[in-house]
Amino acid sequence: MATKKIGEVILEVNNISLSFGGVKALTDISFNVREHEVRAIIGPNGAGKSSMLNCINGVYQPQQGSITFRGQTFKHMNSRQVAEMGVARTFQNLALFKGMSVLDNIMSGRTLHMKCNLLWQALRWGPAEREENAQREKVERIIDFLEIQAHRKTPVGRLSYGLQKRVDLGRALAMEPQVLLLDEPMAGMNVEEKQDMCRFILDVNGEFGTTIVLIEHDMGVVMDISDRVVVLDYGKKIGDGTPDEVRQNDDVISAYLGTSH
Image (cartoon, one colour):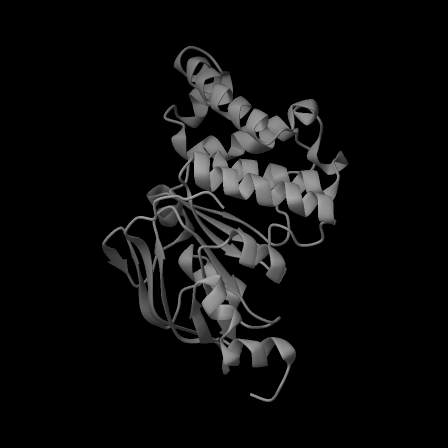
């Protein structure tokens, strides 16, 4: 990986605990994310990784702890607040509009940047038309960046799974996030699709300077593209550090090899 300048801490997770009924999903989790880094969250199935992302982007409200973003500390945030502050998210299970084109799906990520009201947008006249044309230019650049020009007018439901994942990434990029949360962006992909997605993630991080928080099961991928890794197991943090440090952590080795806890 090319040398890059990692900045100051942009996001801090402080003592987060989350329960569903009597089941503890997360217990006293703390870690931070630095500007411009790729920060991976790994762990076996059921470790609490997606629950952690859901706390960060306001889908879940933790019972304890807080999240600090650019120096502002929040106990509870909703998803819209998080998006307005510059945090975008892709989901493990694709939530695309299958009947809409690639272009229109990615355009939906520009909603927060639209200034004209819904009536103007519906009429597509005057200021609304000018605004839509400007937004469309930005979306076309994302389509070029993700190398999906040939599919721009294709309904997303007709695309391969790997290309749909790319569209999902494009919609998140259309929000112009400072922090991008990726929930298993390579799940279900073949080797070639994974290589493409790795390249796009590194390019987003390198060319746009976007900070990335990534959940991924493929340990080879994680160790190749991450600057730092936090490891969860049964909702608890068992490791945190560089890929090399995590690789040598006895608790992490035990969790992945299935030895007794």
